[in-house]
Length: 358
Ligand SMILES: *[C@@H]1O[C@H](CO)[C@@H](O)[C@H](O)[C@H]1NC(C)=O
Image (cartoon, rainbow, N blue to C red; front, side, top):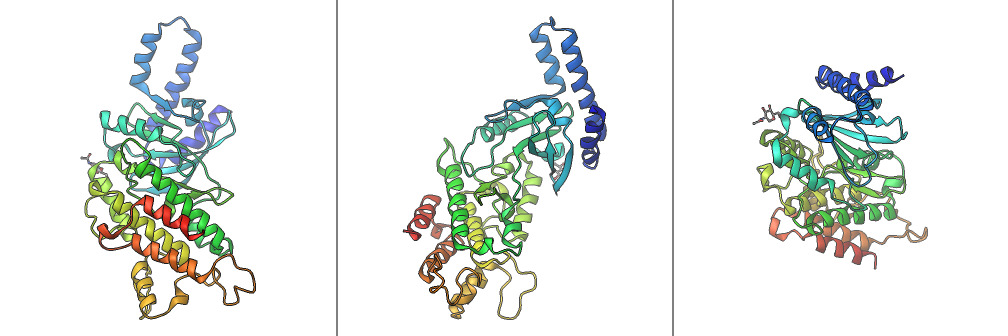
């Protein structure tokens, strides 16, 4: 039975080029378990030395019951890939929990104490709108695996464009917007030192079944080497979330996060992609420019998805008015201001969002 499970995780990981490494890890892992049972009297100190040479598991709040074998024996399914790593949906056998495993390519990460300190920092961040880091596994050859909860409803980018009516209901748009702002407020103002997200986009907002949003991937850029961080930034630019003044990932700031947040708010409002690959003559490549032009040309109806504010909305008791939509739009546009000094900070964003519904 165990053999079959082992194989399932090993196969997808093999595509990340780690077949041999993982087989070794699993071998050591299971061998050690057997050995520990046999040699219970072995001095604790000696055991710890051996473990640090082979592998290590750090667990954080909510992940205390994780074990190395749990993680490495879990059947895994690849659900995402980037140049710096692979995401797996894994079912832990003992607890029958589903977890998200993020495998980081050793060559793409920074090393040593700075990495460990950052993991400790990220592992302690808890907020109802942030995806927690439950555990971190380091393998004998530098493999790095971050363990997170799994959210079944998927990410906000899919949700906005899945063709159903829910993504264009004002109450849901508002709930998601407030939740993202609260999560980001915690990162920017609720910690000893602010954590800049660095890669905020609708793909990195996960949803639960009540449409509560959870921000994922915050601070991940702090774990990556300069080259890889820069590649992450280029991807963010290509997807339309990068603030215009941001050139180097290490210069990412609260202000550049706010820009990305503004794009997400515009995405929620319009149902459109942040970049329009095939714009027509009166459209613009970038969503904020498109929206700005729409206002200048009095094409107000194009600001929001037609389902949010139908023509006969008043008779149908729609919970949202044109005035509310306009305030939301202005806030989003202020966040996307080309000049960083004109962007509101996250406290102001949250305050404005809360005022909108008052
Ligand atoms: C950083 O990561 C890249 C992969 O994105 C790798 O090719 C490169 O060797 C790494 N650079 C350093 C300095 O470790």
